[in-house]
Length: 116
Image (tube, rainbow, N blue to C red; front, side, top):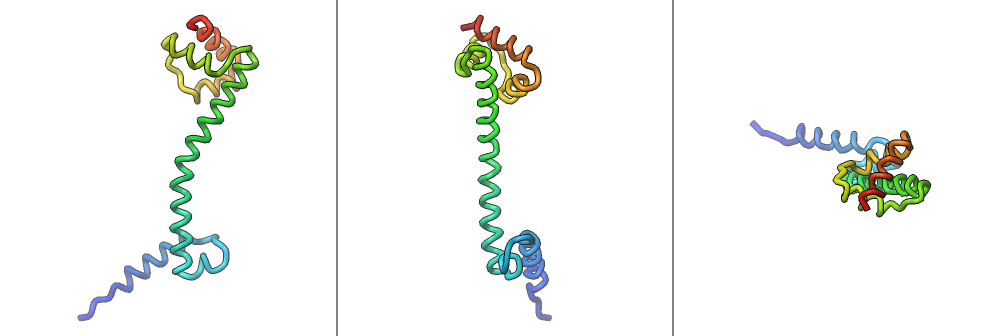
């Protein structure tokens, strides 16, 4: 009996074409072009997942800095003061406090001032 790999290869092609849905022109219809397009898309998605983390950290830093400047303080002084005061709070939480609860954020700034 002759065994072929056509069921497996058909499934593989269907999987790639499903991933390529929504792409323009032949990139979503022809298998060779779909392979290339999906490979590029997966590579960019991998890179994008790393960049997203960087971009959020930059956003948090900007928000904290803006809130600090409004209180007559600097971002670097705040981070330095909080480290010296042994306050362990991450930038995400600080940025959230700066936006949602300015009074609590002002208390953190005072703690940093006292520790410097």
